[in-house]
Length: 74
Length: 526
Image (cartoon, rainbow over all chains, first blue to last red):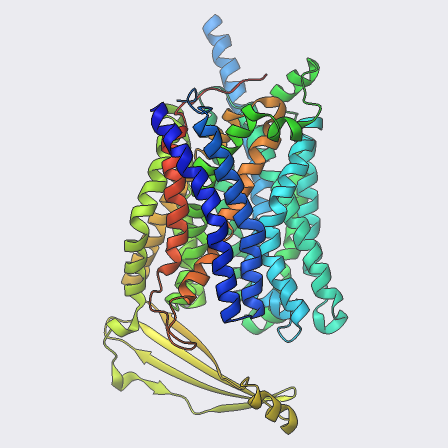
């Protein structure tokens, strides 16, 4: 179980890192296609609020998991 | 003799716990009521305070809806959580109640945009932020307070009453709005009657403050304070110390994020889907949600109590898993039940009214009403309203800008059988909500130590619910819009909005299953 938890730690960290370019590129693409106020507000909320929370928490959580910090909780 | 003394002592303890639950729950319920009436009346508030032709006001409208929902709530959690861990639970959540009640009452009194101009949206925006701040501090305090009064082995049961308040708050908000709307008639309600639910809050909050003033401080906090063990810096202890931060992260990613999206989907997205995708008429769609909420509410307590017996983890995880698997089939059935394309129209009963032309202010308003009946008993009413300025120059300007498009209101009225079916579909989703939400207060309070419990549990709760859950309407609407082939055409996949809650709940399920323990009684006072 510990090995699986650590292995998934890599997955969470990679997800946390991967989401940053994915969201930013999508935002740039959609805003370039239609630079409306609605688009700006939506992507601002996603980039300023949602993305940092998801990225930071997944990366930190993944590193903790990889280091075996959650082994004892089981 | 000794047995009798023990029995009397147990009876007194249960009676005291009940008083604590009642006093805490009433206040929390009223806070949720206050918070929801703004969201439920968003359309009217938008018309009164945030006119669409003023871009700044429109921007404030969006921010008021979302900022208070997700940005401010976690700040409220930090601010009041810290206060609660420093000075005590009782006084902190008394303050949140006063702020919430005061803001709500004040919103009901703010003059409209037509009277005081830009000050109107600005004042409402600030009051809405205060509402969010207060809500951020309330829940953690109430859950912590109740848990710290509850006997060991029964925390799931007792804290589940706090869990019912969010749903009952929505129920109360919808109920008060429907009653006031029906009593005053729709035009009067839209003119000034919408203020009544806000003003009523002052009375509710007054009663709740009176009850809460009589409550005693949490026994665990009192003991800790007497021993001088309170935290000097709850924020630093909660989020800078690795041992606690890792629990905050697991609470967020493995529990509250998934719980937040399941909760918002079952209660709010369901209503939005009924009204916007299925076009179910206003009162019918609201009563569907109301009845489903009433039927589902006892299950919060059931699953809370069950979590004392079999553990919190598996109930919450089962709720997330079933929701992930069942959402698409349930929403497909909801959509099909109201889809007019799948019904046979009784053409001989179709009627189209003559255009009704009225002069309203500086505009001419032309209204045409089409009524259709279908073989399964479904009725359909379509109202097309075209507003044209009397002023020819303005008319030409709007025509050139393509803004003279008619406004169409669709209303599907379901026959009894389909109406009950729809209640069943929403009820099933409320059951998912009760599974993930019923045990979560006990789960959260048990994974953090008393000295920093209020701060530590409030943040993941409000990020999970405010950010992950609160964004369900925004992101889901966006996902549906992305499948629309062209403006004016129906979306290719009206269920696309479900992918967001499904994805978040799936990740939360995997993390929860892997990393969360199933203990039920690991709460301490250290």
